[in-house]
Image (tube, rainbow, N blue to C red; front, side):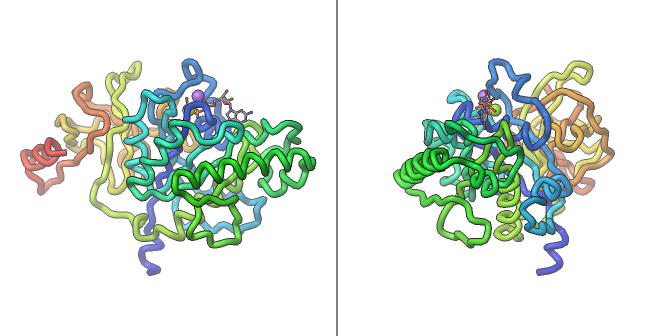
Length: 338
Ligand code: GTP
Ligand code: MG
Ligand code: NA
């Protein structure tokens, strides 16, 4: 229905996969940042969130001439760690998302945390796209910066194409062994029964336009109902952390509803929002930088909240807002029951 199409929130997309497959680097490539370079040991150890406005996605996909008329305001992307010790963070991330990107290293195929991620996605029936990353590692790959993958493939030698085909066939077989039908993405095809594989390079950007286009097209097409904005606050604490100059803060994902400065929140501690901060669009929430200050923010968005008493907040917990007609004790009970 027309009415709900005009009132869609941004889809939440979770990036998952085995350690070092290039999840953070893919986001760096889209953002024009170097978050991965600042990570200790090059390992992601927290959940991150980045907001991509629709205009940036449109710009990045324009070479595909798909005439993208995005109905959603943007895309909220959640980065997760791939290291085996962070199963809880992958679970938290995948529990929040509308769609996921499962990143697979084309040279390695499916690895233990690929399969673990796959099972988390299967469990929640979450749709996903496979990013077959590091295509530039194919021996003899000719760089075509930020080109759509079909265009980049046309530039490759017969030998590179053959290597690609061999890896692809092998990886499709590995997915089949996990009970999943996957297929190379074709923008013009419906592909209802199969999961799309989009080849990418996070270093030179090939396939990035395809990845962004598939993500936005797929979410809009299949999820109008899920993406219809709702007023009821739906919010989860991603991380609890001390930030120099701000004290203990919480990073949250607000899926639906509006948060205001001064709102009384329960999560499960009871406090009042002192400040609502976001990084600038296309910047990572988990990286300390300059923040934008908001009186109110509407979901979906990744937000840093400052307030007193947040050292007692719990990562992974739902955050509730005590409205003017709500009974604080009742809200507290609901929060404790989670
Ligand atoms: P974790 O978050 O720790 O699980 O890793 P990740 O999946 O985020 O991978 P990350 O972005 O940290 O990249 C791991 C390494 O692979 C880094 O050295 C990257 O530079 C490299 N890398 C990532 N993507 C590509 C790619 O497309 N091509 C090449 N050649 N190297 C890549
Ligand atoms: Mg990472
Ligand atoms: Na890494």
